[in-house]
Image (cartoon, rainbow over all chains, first blue to last red; front, top):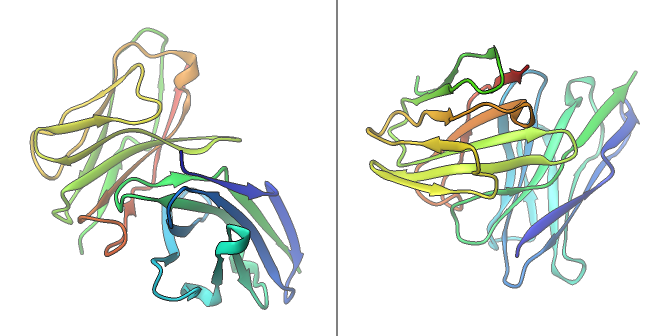
Length: 112
Length: 114
């Protein structure tokens, strides 16, 4: 069965520092991978998605993620954190282009 | 603008009562989903629908039911609420496959079963 594992339920960074949120997937076939962000008291919003067109995917708000098949990883990065990036981030996988299977989430805190 | 709305946003109910959570979307999407969000579990799929009169069970469907009588609505019913169903519930919709399109999420319903 396909699944995703997010390493670290909480990540704290200083404003201006690199953001790195980790996601590893398990799938018997090349998956479709997604990163969603959830701001406090809101629903989820799509940050970016990998659909096999390019291994480096750029998303909204300066985030990007790189698909590495050899490492079965799809880590999310942002060069310089901003206070407004504080939120919960979910990695998700889909094999059949319909249902999403979510990871357990990583809460990002940004300190001034 | 098109949107997806959930109601109520917050609800407290007693054990054993039947509860229905509403989800309404104006995107005219065929696919609709219900997830529950719990600490340490992320979001887990409860039920989903690919169109009118179509419903399917997700990974945590026990104790829940849905019906799809029109394109816009997918109400989620808890037949007999249990404390284990205290959670935040999210509805989502998408137009076809997730590769080509994006799933849009409602703002969630926080349900407390006492």
